[in-house]
Length: 327
Image (cartoon, rainbow, N blue to C red; front, side, top):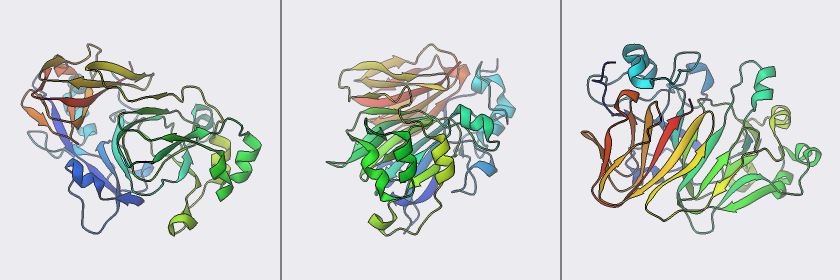
């Protein structure tokens, strides 16, 4: 195996959203003037026909000999050095999508298609995701699933109208908390919340309600029929974890698509998981170094499979997420 492939960063894809804001500037993102940016795609390698909100849904290597290359091009050039035993998507692309989301206003109430829906609807893609709360205004919430007394008939009748809001289960948004959003779960980020989002590589979203009257937004397409068919009232795995303050490592989630570990360390050198495959490192606070790559707060780096024995150096207190792919 060629071990010259070293950890690297990618230029983020900045995506304009009606609910977005300017908070990403606090995390090192250079936003265009006068534009509401809701998403920073830190690691993205989607084909053109599956992302409606950006012209180029591919983050590209930001420096070094691979500068300007998409991850699909890196896979083609580096082979197993990047992915190791982890297979690419059926299109030869990187099998993970990682973002930072800034919700200045409520996101649309939405649902993503589950496996059964995808199997019967060509052109849709499975989307399972997880949120780590990076920052949150006091009193802000996450809409995470449906209220315990909601039933399928009532929810389906409420799609597209404010009547769906009482059906939503609200959870306080607390920095450091973690929330898994399996496919089929009705969900939304509340205003004032910023999260790191890890998901399967898909942009298939069905909107159920868009807070148009509340925020005076221009109407966007609703997906009553698709959403009604794709939602699951109480899907398995819709778990949450409270913030964690201990030093060390905790596993937030592990499924067949990806796994996430939260690292909290003081000064020193720390090993990555011994599991095979590439790693995405997202720095929540502090500064970490991987070989000669320095990652500051809000930065994301990609550690190739051939370099996972690299030690992560922390020169002061730091919190970062280590994200790997299911094998």
